[in-house]
Structures are given as C-alpha cells and as structure tokens.
Image 1 (cartoon, rainbow, N blue to C red):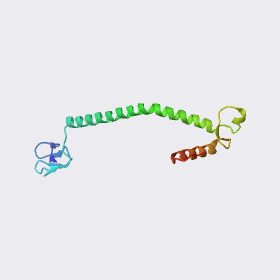
Image 2 (tube, helix red, strand yellow; image 1 turned 45 degrees about the horizontal axis):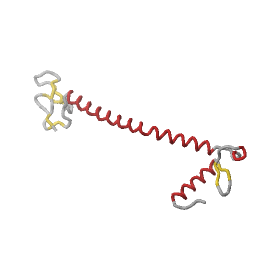
Image 3 (spheres, rainbow, N blue to C red; image 1 turned 120 degrees about the vertical axis):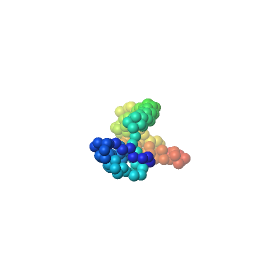
Image 4 (cartoon, one colour; image 1 turned 60 degrees about the vertical axis):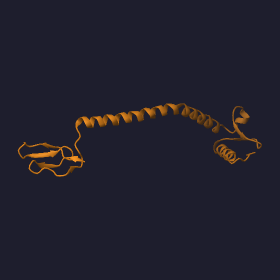
Length: 135
C-alpha cells in the first residue's frame, strides 16, 4: 500500500481534499493517516494495465479460434456420421423386401430399426469393449 494521493477540491487554504485512490475525504489541516488501501494510479498506468489485459484476452481469443478451426472438420465428419445413422435407423422394416440399404442381425436374419437397432448396436459395442464375441 502507498500513501494517500490527495487532491484539493475546495481551495488550497484548509479546504476539502479527497484521496484520488480510496476517496477518503479530509482537509489540509487533518490529512488521512496511514497508507491508502486503494492507491491512486495515473491514467497512463490504468491504460497500460487495460492494454495488457486486452492483449492477453486477444491471445486467448486467437487460440480459441484456432482450436475451433481444428475442430470444424471433425464436427462435420461426426455430423455426417450421425445423419447416416439417423437415415439407417429410420428405415422401414420392409426395406429388405423393397431392396436397398437396411440394418440387420445375423444369424437371426432380422431387419432392425429404431430403438431395436440402438439396443443391438449398444450391446455389440459393449460386447466388443468387454472382449466378448457377440455372435
């Protein structure tokens, strides 16, 4: 902490003075004692601090934008995979008879869609992660 930085408000002959840091009010006859809890900083010092904070924030923003640019292709790929899966998931169970792409399970030879397809995929993933064979 530093000493109070007093500024005359009402005349220089015993009038009101205010600390530019902590805003303590006093007179020239009875100046504040002790150290100022919020020392005064010049406009230049405040500007320099603000510019340093702005520069740090700009660096963070630049890094975030660069990371976002790196994630965009991955996001596009994941979105395409999700759209493909939704299309397959929503296929009519009669797709096998109509021809075209469908999801099924062997050796039962059943066509799957909707929640049934979700559950079979989840079970197959869990089985593969557990090292078990889902046949």
